[in-house]
Every structure is written in structure tokens, then in C-alpha cells.
View 1 (cartoon, rainbow, N blue to C red):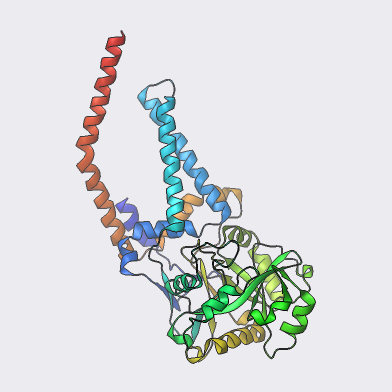
View 2: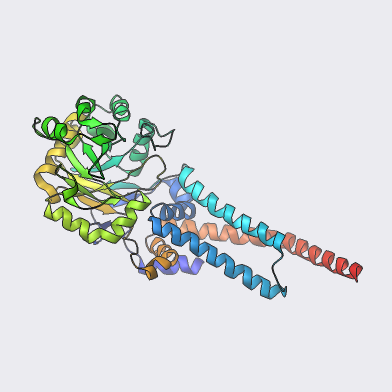
Length: 413
């Protein structure tokens, strides 16, 4: 294990890539806290798991089940028993299942250090265009607007749009605690997620004063076009979120931006399958490509960040920043944003999906910093010496078990 951790450093690559080109990103880096480095094996593993697509999660669980089956079959052959002992095998299987559930629960619920994106240029602002709070019907109950802010701040976001389903309550509560200047802390801006033509849209830069344009979770297209799009100097921005169909004719409103990264596992699966179609749609409609965490309170590490160059954004008020973001998106289209990804595009073919675990493990190891590698080596040694320390106890218990079975067999004979 130590040789693998050290040897993969020979193939090291930057952990961040450009979503549009796939090339390494040199103008940003991930800042890791002392706690993250100290717990690197846990944090790295849970981060890798948290950015899996839906199909990758299925492949991961299937791989664990396959390895378990092979392990128990080999154990049976070595022990010389004709068949598994049902009670013991049920217990072992239950423990493995519990371990998998614990891993997923820990990745979802455990509060842990997160990697934070840091930009080189002071004019670059990092934005999340799609997030939720407990005011969404499917949001985590304790994911308040302030919890939303803290998660974004820990992940390196300078601003984020709260786009709850059919509600402005979360955005209104968040606005009351915004810093007076954007450079003084993470700013939460107002938006809403609605349905139109069978697809989900995020409307950015809209608030409760536009409530007549929304009927619950649905968009009132005519009212929206007249009041929110046409009568403002800088119109609200329409973002096509994923998962969803890509047919532009299915909605009566124009699309200004499209997600090329969405933190939901189903969204990541669609993006992995249709990345070329998404980029073509953005090009054909002069729309910006953006990243949305789609965080409902269950996300951990962010799979991607949207970056925009806005000169002087740090001295702007939240309202001025919102206007600057929307005007830049509408004016520059595809040239308005850059999307930085931490994950590589996932597999599309069945063969690649089947190789999810080794590929993800390889990707994780070749992107480690040397501080993370030293932490991994330390924990490997701790585990090794701990195993050596308890070896006499396990050997004694094993021998006691064998002796007991021999005595039982002798008595039965």
C-alpha cells in the first residue's frame, strides 16, 4: 500500500480541469486545511465517492458485492467446508452491508473539512448558480440559508444563487445576513427553480416582487416574459438545469445558460452521456456553460465551480453584484464563464462503468499532494502496527475456536 501511494506520485496530474477543454487548470488551486490533510485517507475517499454519477454509485456497490462474493467463496474453499454456514455467512454479509451503508451515511451526514477553491486573479469570482435550502420541499430540514452560506464559504464560493423550488423564503432570509460588500464574505443571491415545458429552469435575479410570474413550482411564461424579461434594464437569467431533456423547442422562454456540471448523481450521469450535445446546445443558443451544485443539504465536496471575471466585484453591494453577473452572462454568452471541475467526465460505455472503482482509485491517487501522501503513509503505518498489536489476541481466539470445535467433534463421535 505504501509503495502504491508513493509510486503513483510519478504519474501525478493537477486535480482541476477545464470543463470545456479538459485541459489542466493552472490559474486556480485547492486549499486544504490542516484537518483535511490530517484525515486525508477519509476525506479523499469520501470526496471521490461524493462526486460519483448515479451509474458510478451503482457500479461501486456492485463491485463491493462481487468482491465480497469472491472473498467468501475463496474462504470456503480454503476452509474445506462443503458449503457456507448459513448463520455465520448471514452475519458476515450483514456486517459488510452495514459498512457500505455507514460509508454512504458518513459521506452524506458527516461534517468534515472540504477542499476550497482559490483563484489567482482578484477579479475572478467563484459562483454557484444552483443551490437550495430547507425551504425547498426536498431540502434537508436543517439546511438553513446560513448553513447553505457556510457550505459555500468552505468550498471556496464567493457567491451563490438560492433557487428553492417555487419559493423565495430561503433567499429572503439569506439576504438579511449578506455582507454589505461582496468581498467581505459569501453572498447569497435570489432565484427560483420552476418547471416549464416539462423541464426545470432556474430563474436568476428574480425575487418575491415577481411572484405573479410563478405559479408554485410552475412558470407562468407570458407573465414572466412581459414582467421579468421585458420591463427590466437587466433581465432575469434563465438557466437550464439537469437532469432534463435538451430539446430547446419545449419551452417558450429563451435559455441564457446551461449546466455543464450538476452535483446531483442523475445530473452527472446525463452530463457524462450528453456532454457534446450540451456544449453544442450552448453554442447554438449563445448560452453560457455553468456549474451548479444543486445542493439540497446532502452534498459534501463540490464537483465543479463556475468562474467569471468581473472587475471590482469585491467592492460591490449584493444587488450590484447580482446585476453585474446577469449583465455579463447576457452580454458575453459562452465567453462569460469558465467551469473548473474536480472530477473527470465519468464513463459512458458499460465496460468503463464496470471499471469505476479502479479508475476512481487511480484518479484519486494521482491527484494527491505530497502532504496528503504523507498522511496516507502515516495512517497505513498506524493500521499496520495496530494489526500487529492485536494479532496475538486474534490468534488466541482462532485457536480457542478450533479447539472447541475439535472437542465438540470428539464428543459427538
